[in-house]
Amino acid sequence: MTISFNQIPSALRYPGAYIEVDGSQAGLGGDIPAVLIVGQKLSSGTAAAGEITLVSSVADAKTKAGVGSMLAKMVERYRACDSALDVYMLPYADNPAGVAATGSLNITAVPTADGTLALYIAGALVSVGVAAGQSQASVASAIAAAINNDVSLPVGATVAAAVVTLTAKHKGTCGNNIDLRTGLYGEAMPTGLVMAVSAMASGTGDPAPGDLATMIGQRWFRYVALGINDAATLAAWHAESQARYKPPVQAGFRAFTAMRGDYAAAVTYGSSKNYEHIATLAMGINPITTWEAAAMLAGAAAPKLYNNPVESLEGTPLVGMVATSYYDWAQSNSLLFKGMSVLQYAKDGSCTIKRIISMYQTRADGSTDDAYLDINAAEVMERIRYEQRMAAIKRFTGTAAAKTNEGYKPGLRITTEDDVRAMLLSLYRNTLMREFGWVQEYDYYKDNLVVEQDPQNPSRFNYIDTPVLLSPFYILAGRAQFRKAV
Image 1 (spheres, helix red, strand yellow):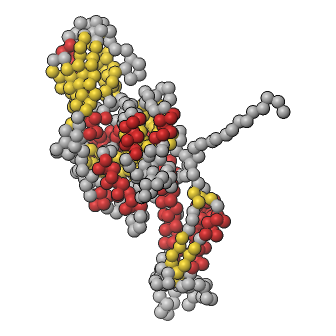
Image 2 (tube, one colour):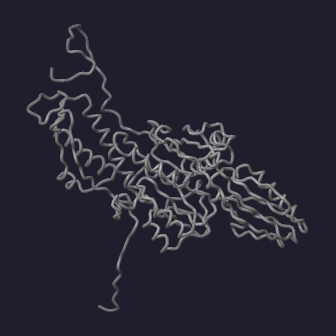
Image 3 (cartoon, helix red, strand yellow):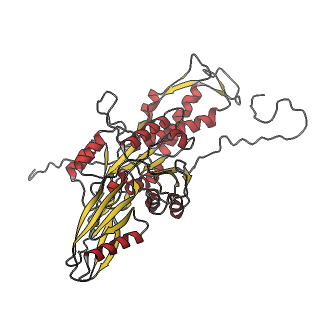
């Protein structure tokens, strides 16, 4: 018998037509990627801290993480950018030893005419009506009441005399990044009203990352939004990203986060890290919180990367992001050499991605390395590896291994070096290059492909290949050498 069967025995004499159905070659893939949103929950949230849970909607996130929580806001921001990919969240409880950040609003002069105070907390408008001659304490009380009436805000308010004290709902350094300002869109202060704003500060004690390998388990989250961005958290997610990118797991992820600060702070932040699977958006001193920005960045980048991992992300809208100022050209260009991603903002404050890079910058010896510069590089190599793995599983599982074809009859399930080579070449040319458009230089790839049966383990085939990736397009450089006469 020259054809191998899985279910029909060779010792068969009873009459009949026996046809087994084999779907091993029929699968076309088509999974839906999973996104993991990581952040802090409030005690009112029903989700258990440290346990990953599926999120069915923004309302579900508010129930599980608590209204006004970091996580609930992140899910809301993510879904405003992407409604297609599956979303899970990993909730962290506040560090019991942590301290919540505080800020204050001090009313130093009363309004002399009726008006409306346009107060913005983390970019969210809090409108407060004031009346001519209203006392300082009365204005302060009205502001505190308006803040507390909006449970979606990241702060709560208390009032003492003419001073409103704002306290972050979460303990930790996250509260230090809550922006306080008035007139974000040019709204005028009520006539006569003077209010001194003291920025949010003094938040300390972020949650410990915990055992990420255990918390994530065998699930494959392709994209991660990190609302917590302290050094210990990023170091832990970097270690986990490397472990999951390598064999035997081979189910890595791209992680997105954001930092708020001036140019010098962004340089310091980026220069101290070297993470090939984490992208950090330098967002300047702008209204949106860092955790919301992380979710926006993930929501903008994840679906586009999944659709085509080699295409440029430039121009992708960051839905909900608002900017009033940003780094200049020289500073932005410099940050792209220091592991920091940059955005672009329009006159109306709306923002788009300019360039998303990983935080990877140097080899182990400290020498500069741009192998994983754009976040696309690690992404497309993961996708190529996945296609190779799936092709090999479909074609070679359940076969025998031989070095060469020495005249075996057709139909026998035998894999040779030439079979492995043919599979890799066909996949490269017909799928990765012609259909997907991820790679190029087929002849170079073919000439440099090496496949061999392991001399010490004949059940194993080894290969080394050299895929030549397409790169996202970002720069056109020209030189216009003009003449006034020829």
